[in-house]
Image (cartoon, rainbow, N blue to C red; front, side, top):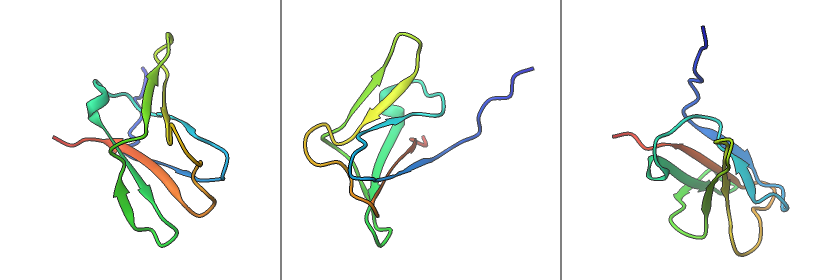
Length: 85
């Protein structure tokens, strides 16, 4: 029997270099993912632009943020979670 992942939110730390972040849980549509950014104080703001979501041929998904501009610096975070209906 396979146990499905129960992850509901994934957080990645900025390092000044990374812009691609793997999605670690299943979802039905791109619109089912909610992205946000947290600053050094933990204040979260939604990410509504300058990102892309790519699904490759094996079904693996990657969030790219930012698509254009400087990667998140150390101390900031990017996160995603499913949209709750």
